[in-house]
Image (cartoon, rainbow, N blue to C red; front, top):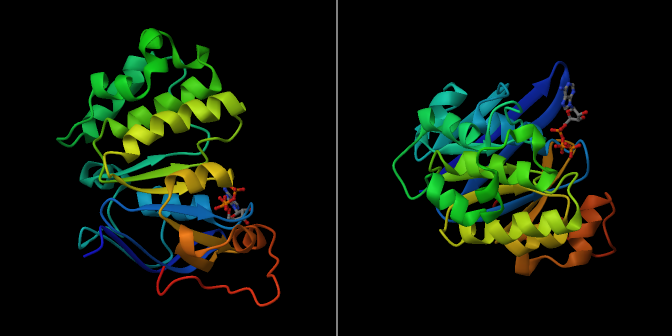
Length: 245
Ligand code: ATP
């Protein structure tokens, strides 16, 4: 049974159909990179899975339980954690306080302040600093660490490298490697294709609210992937790289 099974999911912004009938499955320990151009609907899809954006139609099953109508807070307590685009930290609170905010939705598991600081060592000297005083890379580390503090079963990461320097991106991804090593299931939205490929087993390409291609990363050529970014399909190229998304 899939950990997460999404069927016919639709989500809107007013009259705009941002997610148009997506089917997607995420298995325990699997890592999916969700890629596509700006406006493809990736953020809206992650927010709908986390329960922050309303679902217009379709169903979300988590570990076999229908969570489509369940609040974001309860989904977090069940093991769905979102690291939102733009990080959304409490700027006037310290790093430790930002991490402790996650305690209310905490499940039993390996992640606590000590283990997240081990995974993101750049946070160790900053635990008493207010979040707004941190660099972009450090703030991103806090956002991921805060999500880990809930001990999620499915981690949803939205554009973790957005606005960061190349060195900061590398720092965040170096730390993510230790998270990935725990075989946590994750969906990663990432414009940096090299970083996405370094983490993911499977790629799902979105365009205008729909999945236009999917497959194991070893089954998709870089040219096919780039074609979906730029909405161009190479001669003889395939839109589908696997049996099911
Ligand atoms: P990006 O990489 O730019 O964040 P995305 O693939 O994550 O793109 P979404 O942010 O989900 O895409 O946007 C999907 C569509 O919904 C786009 O057409 C976008 O303009 C629209 N949209 C997103 N947020 C809002 C909003 N708050 N109000 C109205 N329309 C929105």
